[in-house]
Length: 153
Length: 455
Image 1: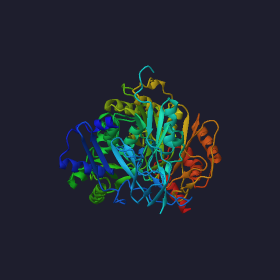
Image 2 (image 1 turned 180 degrees about the vertical axis):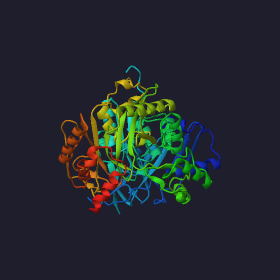
Image 3 (image 1 turned 120 degrees about the vertical axis):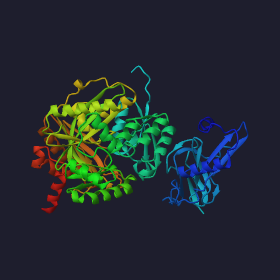
Image 4 (image 1 turned 90 degrees about the vertical axis):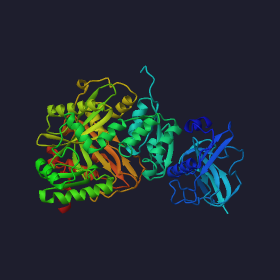
């Protein structure tokens, strides 16, 4: 992953100017993506840009799939808002975003879908408890794939 | 093949019957396929048969089959090294073709520059005229702003004329003008519509042919200077500029006439460095061919040419994209027998309203000379989001009469339940005396339908 992001972003040896960061945020918003993270461990640099697309779900081209109660047991499926590799744990940490049994609030990030250096958060459609994790970490998942079930509060 | 192939995994950026058609050609050539699909097409045949299948978006085409960035990301994630665009969707989008190649992938089609040249009707006609392809008399460029100058052009071309938007197509952005008195208003209105619909108010005008036939020439060109023409198709049976039934060859046009126009098309391809499959569309009236446009992709009706030449056009596209030589010359291409294609649509045979729903029965015809290209199986759901094409029946015979007879039986055998289809329309057309004689013009079907409604 790091090799590929170096090809895409060749010179991350110092932090970009504020205008440049603003431009990158605009590009993210235009591409319908929610966040971008740049990391240069050797230089001890890290930049994360998030744009507020998740909050304006209706206007976002990658709005989370609407919550629909599952026929069995009243659980609600968590679906991916884009295709990519499924990431169930934070890339820099060992802990899962939302393991089995975790309590989540509506809109909480429960997973990430990664495409090279880009990361698209997967949000909880309802508040509740993670009842089942069906997605496989690292797997290539399509748009609208069910990755976990939430038992609503 | 001694050289290393440029690609061995192809992403099919399309759906329906053409996605399956492309997949078959890939598999026969030993290439792996990636099916990218919308949520609505998750249960499609080519999705099940693909080496890799990836849902890339919701049913809306703008977020799936028409999303260039999504398709490129999908190609990278799935390791596809080439993209076949099929027909429709992004197949004639020059920017997409460029973006594919800029991403280091192979676009299975012509260069972005060729697509761009043919996408603009004015540059396309100019290029064709320079290459010796006959064009309809017209303004030979954008109309001037001065109305007096426009009038002078129209009088020189001869009325009736048709005013067309340079960026238009598919029957949109055009207006027929019978008399010089009506010209100014028509030009103003069409320019306004063109600006709104295509973002480009540029217009041109040409002689309006009264009862032409639609004749088209299939070409196939490699990247080593070989350009071949594969005979003619007659696609005159159209409703609202949509082809309904096509045949190859064109009834009543001498093979020498087709050979002459075919050679000019091939020569034009050599001159512009065209690569891949393409089709030159002409209006034909009183022995005169007039170039309308070139389609820079594989067409729905390509199978009838495959039947009469024995050439697999889609496999040809793939080999050309690999950089291979066609390995045949014009003399190796036989034009044998006659083929007819009936497009099966899930639609009401009288109102032509789309008829989406679950297909509960799907019995296919068969026997000598019958080919069915379809993605549909019993239990398939016809989606309301896309075009209503559910399959194509292609009949081949040593003569036109035999091809018609085989098609009649095939249509009788074809049983579809759960959705309405236009099978009955095809049966009526095959029984029509004017069709049986051959050579009806492009307005014939509309007149025939109007009469049917009236009686």
